[in-house]
Image (tube, one colour):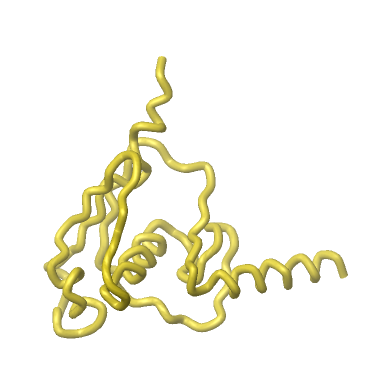
Length: 130
């Protein structure tokens, strides 16, 4: 029997619950890609999200990660820390359509907060070695 987990993504679709959005004139719902967003069907192999700076790419990816259970600043599900809340409320309006398999682990790597994640890891390691 073939390993089906490689052909079925963990998240198949991301749906914006538009009926719950009070106003598309406020952030992040006023960003053109999110204002026009209904559903994002993810390809089983890879999905590329591209666009200009400030177009909402990171906002969408961050919201998906938060809805999946990751720390908005990056890291694994088991590694929680916070330097300052900066994420939008978009995750509260998303529904993830998941595949039949759950991942054993995961990591949300945000380029903007990689320094924060690595600093927090160093601090935890220093505390354990003290």
